[in-house]
Image (tube, rainbow, N blue to C red; front, side, top):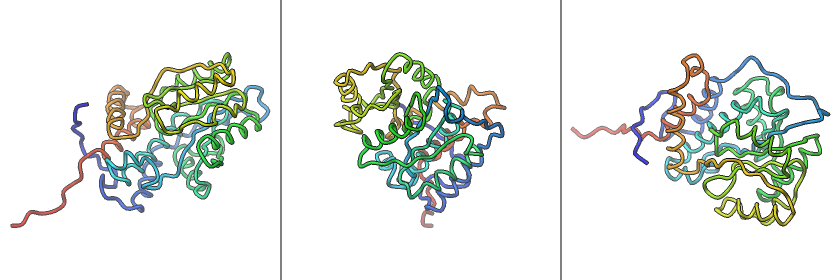
Length: 293
């Protein structure tokens, strides 16, 4: 990939060396760009076809999220990128399915997640529910949330992470359709994992003895489905953003899309703000030192 010539974009904070207070200020600045006034409620409980979306997310503490990326652009910038990804997904998929849930970790930061959703879209009670991630590893957390979602009336459940903020909306539509005829739907990621998993009932065997966050995650999940006699549909592959190379890939894709947006849409489109954020975080640090006279 060719080096990028990135302009600095001023948004009230610096691209390198911010404090945690600055990160909190960025949270407020970012969220202020999104506050649609046309929120609509999801289908009420008891709806015979309750398509439910879950987004698994961590609190955006520097050094605890996007650690591989943080080694390249700094922990504070990696946390900003993570928060930008989560904000973008919340905005883009706030009308997807009949019910939406942010599945948050750790539970002690539940209030921050609720505040984020309220600032991003407004009136979160009409858009997103909240649940805590429960379990010792990712498999247990996925299984626990899956069982809870179906006990609360879900007829189809699709789960996402936060590593693919530009995931095409149509892939989620394809996932819902696939679950009409298959037990499981998977979205293969380029790194050997998956960006999406969906089922129409709890399937404990899907999450047992899986090597999480490894190039074998998808293969092991497919093998688990085979052992449990589950039919599987696979969506088109997509990519996760975990390092500098994939972040630049995202930046280039967003730049191309943003350039095609009509001006009236671009003013409020989440891709515009995400593209600006990534530009800041990829830009070289500003040299504030002065040379000796």
